[in-house]
Length: 172
Image 1 (cartoon, rainbow, N blue to C red):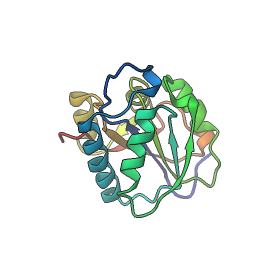
Image 2: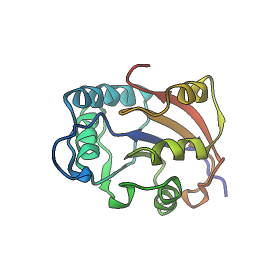
Image 3: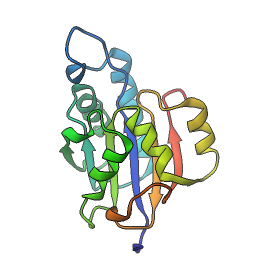
């Protein structure tokens, strides 16, 4: 089923985390991560995408990344902290996205690798400009994001249906 306007999803990997003596879920951002999260937020603002919803992992580093990035956006979208995003595979992330309401047009998912990069690779059946080449060359470093578009309902989101519109990483 197609939709009137293409839906957009931004897959955003958390910024650089520190390695203190805490569980992986409780790891905070490193100093560089705090800087990169704000820069990524400015780049997201520059995209002009009016986000309807942000889905964020419950891990400390993703919540901190989002808290810093969202301050740069002109409009703060509704945020849902979703524990299923933490350590999720691409297939598990698709399951989360398939549950989104039809009125959600533009979604931002803040998560972790390898799931976020894997999802970008799996969803992108096509690519505009050199976005796929840059993503393939760079991988998906901390604070990177990919912008994808597709013409279906959220229930119709599946491998290969999206176009990779853009890719950004802190050293781009």
